[in-house]
Image (cartoon, rainbow, N blue to C red; front, side, top):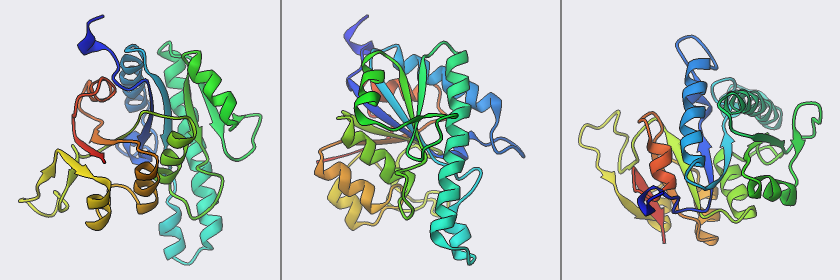
Length: 240
């Protein structure tokens, strides 16, 4: 394998939004999940240890429910359960693609997934298994972005890769502003000061304190996950 095709990052956390799994009229589209599993398999083939965190917004959004009057903690717990459903769908697709996978949950449900234990997660990664972290941090008021940053710090990840529907971080919403400019690189502090909404402030701060670079890129462009793991700047790099 040539140097250009090896993983630059030895261990990464891949953050996916739940909405990315949606199809037309489907909360979870099997075709999209299967295609995503094949992309992850290519990235794992570079030799990187890969963990995943997936959101639950395709099924339930706790923040929206709380704004409508539901108790915030209850709404957030429901959102955590939605991430478990998405994690199980990804687990099934990855196993069918030939990738050994383990699902680890912050909320105890032993018939469905392993409890999150940091040292056990590290052993799975060292054995070449993909680990999917579900149920957030196990606490309300925290987003899955913060979960991804926290797990990246806990397992000593070299990078946090955020796969989204857009091709990077812009100074303004590119869907609303035709003249929006995409950053190729930006510092954590600049992202925080600009209040860029691609990740929440807690996630940016955790990565900044632990010197974990964040790469934000378009997950729907074929090969982008593999390119990100190999170190190519395929979207926007947030770092020191």
